[in-house]
Amino acid sequence: MFNCSSTLACPDNSTEGELKRGLDNDGNLKLIFSVVLSVMMILVMFSLGCTVDIKKLWSHIRRPWGIAVGLLCQYGLMPLIAYLLAIGFSLPPIQAITVLIVGCSPGGTMSNLFTYWADGDVDLSISMTTCSSVIAVGMMPLCLYVYTRSWDLEQNLTVPYPTIGITLLCLIVPVAFGVFVNFKWSKHSKIILRVGSIAGVLLLLVVMIAGGILMKGSWSSDIPFMVITFIFPLMGHVFGFLLALLTRQPWARCRTISMETGAQNIHMCSTMLQLSFSSEQMAQVFTFPLSYGFFQTLNGFFIISVYQTYKRFCKKKHEEKDLDRNQVSELKETAARSEATSFLERDEEASVVTL
Image 1: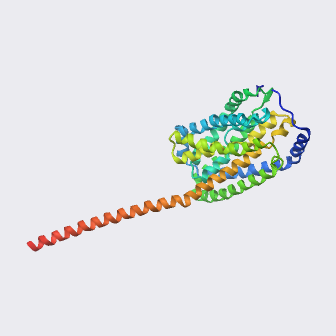
Image 2: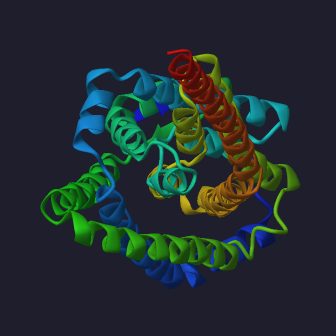
Image 3: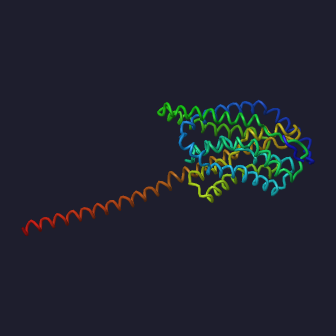
């Protein structure tokens, strides 16, 4: 808990009452959504654990260059982007603080699923998610203290430390079981991975449908606030990829860092808002984390669709061209060898005739 320091604009009474009723009416739906999401995410992380190579995981920990770049994106780029968006769109203090809370949060486990579908480095993705969640204990208060001073919020912002611990447990335990299954029963791990991939598709559908239902009261809210929910995760993906590219990371790592940067831990954001703000303040911003989660899923799905389309058509054509070039070179080498063999045979025949 730390002090930050202002006067919050009071919302219109009718709007506030409507949003309060929305909060009360959607309480059960949010609880069901959270439970289903948690169970499906544990299953997905267990299946992704079956793909983890212990040697690669240890190499990322021993030489954490990829993890360092990812953490720089997570706690360097994302809070800065959040601050610039809040300033650029001239958001009221309460909305600006909400955007910053999302920007200062650690990476979410949804990024691990995106990384798998984007043919990224799953071992690096899991390492980054774990490390960003661990150092969130110190980095979230630090980043919020630095960036929220522009608004002088006169209230306490409470970092949800229990939620951080629960997130780590839901990440590390299923992955550890997946690694154990892959080590003991490698054949069965492939079946589990297929089931997990199907569960991942269902997870995305659940997130998008439930997010759309829970956001039904937010479409009529402030337009700048809604625009930020759309462009914020997309900017995280783009700038995360560019920074990884500038640091000369391999292509698979660039895709991994990009996915990890744009995908925030939405559950942690929602918990922090509930712990820090009153019901009147929550009425103004309670839909922002849901909107961000909806659009980060939509953006991730779009990026993966573009990549898979490129992989299926453009990359296949390049491979076919390379194959054709290899075949031509092999034919030339075969022809050259046959000519050399024919020349030797003719030379030997001429020698026999001379004798």
